[in-house]
Image (cartoon, rainbow, N blue to C red):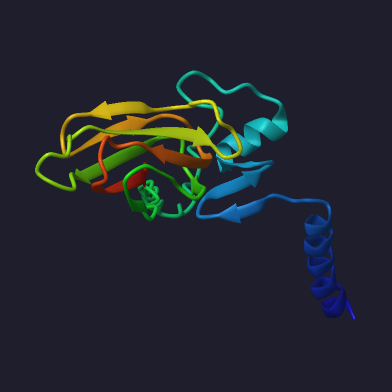
Length: 174
């Protein structure tokens, strides 16, 4: 019966130490709270002694495996389909929606005949309004481009060439 008692006592002691939060061991280090310390440092902590300057109070932390960080994805610029408006002579266009604050407006005008004046203008209005809003342009060329910073929203154009030639206006949201 003594042999059984001798075997039972160490098991009982080990299980009670684990239940009381006894320190964990790993490769010569002891887990103390949230850090790993050497056996000597643990003995000093338990006995209440201060560490000397030649002996630091904390062991180097055990490096944890890190997750390799992937580079942040490059911001992608959203591409928007151009808005193409075509006509001949003076015309008010159907409303269209511009999804961005900035746009490039490209235009091309082909005079009707040899004597047709090559002056071309258009005006941008917010949908439902009649006061000129953004661009009032008079061009004496047959094509060109300009920028608008009118913002996103619904608009329509009033195109007023001084002739009856064909025109194309392309709005490119940026």
